[in-house]
Length: 279
Image (cartoon, rainbow, N blue to C red; front, side, top):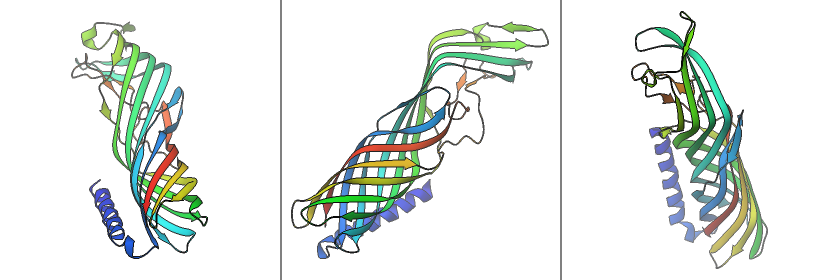
């Protein structure tokens, strides 16, 4: 992450240097933008995916090759929010209890819901075409690379049933609770960190550029960013509900994206974007 931050600082310094000289040459344009509201992770899931909201704010520097064509680079911060809902989830796996005896841990989760919140620092690079006049139509397209700056998940379960099957005795235990076997209603897990990979996206934007003074303009447009790669870091498959032999009464909860119930997560954002530009 430190090398990412250093790279971003270099970009910001570059943009600041360009901004300091914008008044001397109309080939340079510096803009500040804000956009939203639809921003989420589009994923393959065995449950239901609910698209959430997010926002982005950023800085952009553009260099005009001629009066209608420019290339640009920038830096922006983007948030994403997604819900994944499942009517029922379950599983079983081999474990060892506090007395070092092997058994099969089993769990069933009814009405499972997980909310994921992500934050990314994106670096967009693109090209823009605009028509002449004071009211210009513009079209911009390009690509962006995103670095995960934050990520978390939290789950709620209407009912969680855990049990232990001991094949050596041919018995399944649904209690006691201090052994990690119980039926519990209204479970709310603590918020936990969610690690994600670098994102690569294509981006498209179009709208109106209104010149409001000799060097100032306002952009109002619609945009779409679509991720090209899976951002979930799920190289090591985990159990959704993890038995804890040290403290059996305290279970551990992993994300649906790390336990295989939700895969192939791609970042998607679209909506309206407002930009204020200085040239």
